[in-house]
Length: 576
Image 1: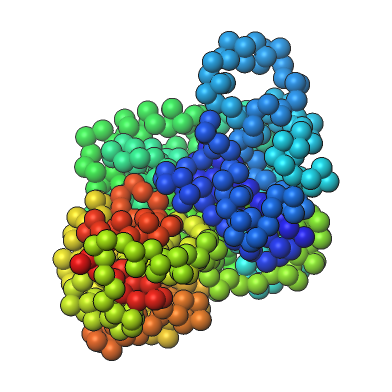
Image 2: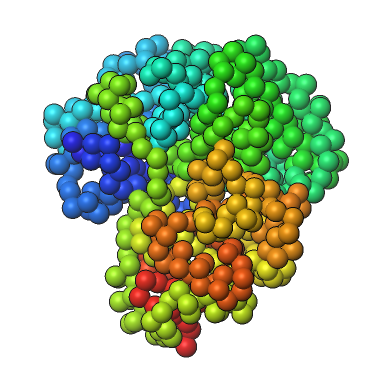
């Protein structure tokens, strides 16, 4: 059965294509449109993602058997005319604005109808007909936080776990918790019971976003810069912010700022006159303190040894490390596409759960080897490079040639296999550099037009990971996908200074040969050249652009001088 899962969000839209429980492909809209964090717009819905995946799989829309959707922005013309009189009047007044925004949030439509039944507010049959899908296709909708949560359980072999989500909000919830034990998932909080609650704002994620904006960065995009900056300050404003938040006996977090505007005004007043470093440190400390307290509180009531995490808050790798270090936690897993781009993945899994029941769904679980789910341009890349003026192939042994240049201080990029899904570059579209050079951080920032405060992340041979980093059975699975920080062993801190933060931590990726042979071979050859089983890994993109997808984007980085060389399965290329 072919399942097309979609997240048609106004930001971070994405799609995943399943053949039963097997992921055939996944892609974010931004990688196709080349607009960072792109979502549905008057220029188009999420069909670009869907058609890309169907084309990759050699399928057409007529071969899709089910469409699974995380509730988000659906085309306005398919909503049923069941709005209140006041809403119809408002729509008439705002008709010009509607023309510019031809989508409406499903959450809003359900709230106005007072019922959590999408078929009551949306004409699925007309939607399918106009999209060129078969009339017998099943359309399945899923709660926002449930979409976040399910991959955190499905991609494990756990027999028990606490699954916890936190973000800037979706379906009128900011957090959710689920207890899994004895083949049963128990929803603790954060479900559709909150859908009809009057507007409120309990989100630590939004508080973090407010500070991001306050510091001159872009909310819901540059929070990672705040995490890096936080290590250089003191939490002088944390207590004043914390006075507005409460952790209840259930583990739920509430806030007395009733809206985002009130939160923005309150945090701005609290932080007035403070240094950027102290403000960043304060909100990082706030986030850590309350999420840790909430999770501990839940674990007292519902003891578990395994912890699954998802939602945009858990892009915060320092927070994830602290959660992994909690007493009694034996393993932590962070969904690799932890933000809203991962909602399509959860929507597909929820359809399969609804179709098959929990027992069969659990039997089909598996641990992820990788998230290389995009298109593979390997053959096209070498063909295009061979025809590109000003580019020359200098070696047919890419791993060895790359290792020599990296050891000499060169900066290169690897372009191999299928593109990664999610926010992290994991060796398919990655820039590589020597971790021993202290000037690497500034040089990469200069070349890529970035302003990163946290050191760039390392990639390490999995078989050498425990020699260099504090990798344990608790965090190793998360480390495979660069979703958590670890300590760096003291004897290695000076040797790989370019990837070590001021608190002696790093965010390593563990790589196995079976998952990405070229990537692993480059690291192996680099270790032979330098004695270091570690390289700098940063995403293959310049500031405010998505990670590269097609060959032309990778080649432009080479010809523009962003990198010194480009390595593919077929060879190593330089400007010439």
